[in-house]
Every structure is written in C-alpha cells, then in structure tokens.
Length: 223
Image 1: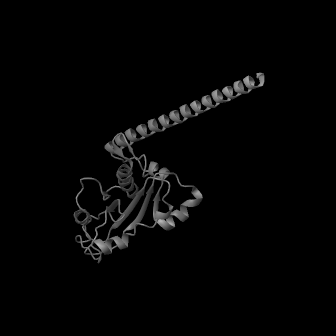
Image 2: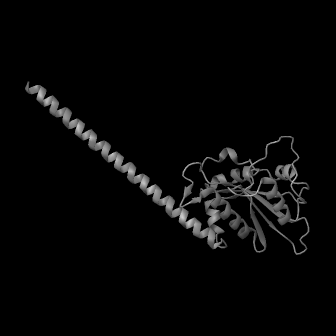
C-alpha cells in the first residue's frame, strides 16, 4: 500500500499494525500482552525501542548491535510482538513476532521477518524460546493457498482470520478503522465518478467529431 494508504489523516499501515497487535492478543488468549514495534514519525530510536521491548518481555536483556555495518535499521521488519507471561514472569514463555502487509504485492516478502535473526542481531541475550513468526495481510487468502503461505510466513492472519478475532479490539482502533474505511470508500467512489465522467466526456467528444466528419463529407459531396 505505497499509494492511497492515508485516509482521514490515518496511515493504513500503522492501523493494520495496531489492529494486528489486538487480534494476536485475542488469539493467544487472556493475559497476552502486545507491543507495536513498527517505526512511526516521532518514535524513539530503534535501539530504544528494542530496550523497551526487552523490558516488557523480561527477556533479551537489552539492545546490542552484533553487526559490522554502521547503518541502523528502521524496524528490522518487526511490526508487532505479543507474549504471554506465567505468574512467575520468568523466561521460557510463548513470544510471537509479526510483520504486517497492507497491499497485495507481498508474495516476495513473506520471509523478510526472521525472529531468530532479529534476536541474534539486536538483543544482548537470546530468549529462552525462539519467538513464533506471524504474518498479517489485509486481503483474504484463498483456502487452497493457506498452507503454502503459512509454510513461508508463519502463522497467517488474513482478512478473514483477523475478523474472527476482532472481539477484543480496542475501541480507539475500531474508531480509526471505521474512519479510515469510510474515507477510503468515499475516495474510491469519487475515483469511479471521475472515471465515468471522463469516459462520458470522451464518448461525447467522439460523437461530436464523428458528426462533424459526416457533415464535412456531406458538404464535400454536394460540391
């Protein structure tokens, strides 16, 4: 969704990340906590966000850059993280890392997020249990394609599965989702109206040109 992702002052990619975090928490059940990691304007730097994530997880230690390159990533392909603590809050719990894609051209990006690589490169300590991989996509996936998609991307949350676990979505997220959807639908209708108007004008011009041509031929024949 590189184009037309902003409607009603809301970024659709950020909205899917917020929605994905809520849906994943609902899917993993009561007590599941979530963290939206995807970079946004005004957010803390990458290292600070990793530190915050480690503190919330109670695992990972802190931010550590084990690479040799000097450039820092935007978000390491991580958009959403969820986990479920035990009462003792000790290491060794289920953790899931997810990537969100709002467009339809995501087939070549299914394996971009690799939780084990993320932890090895950006955390001082590797979590006791490797995080599960999740993939959120805004479109509905054909049933016969789910197995292949999941094999490449991890636990898939397509449009139908997202709707299935929307019961616990925050009111703020729902309100923004409604506003974005209404504005996007209005924009689409306007686009259709413009296309229809343009088409009508084109055909009207063609009819005028054809009539003028016919009149010209008739006048020429009278000469």
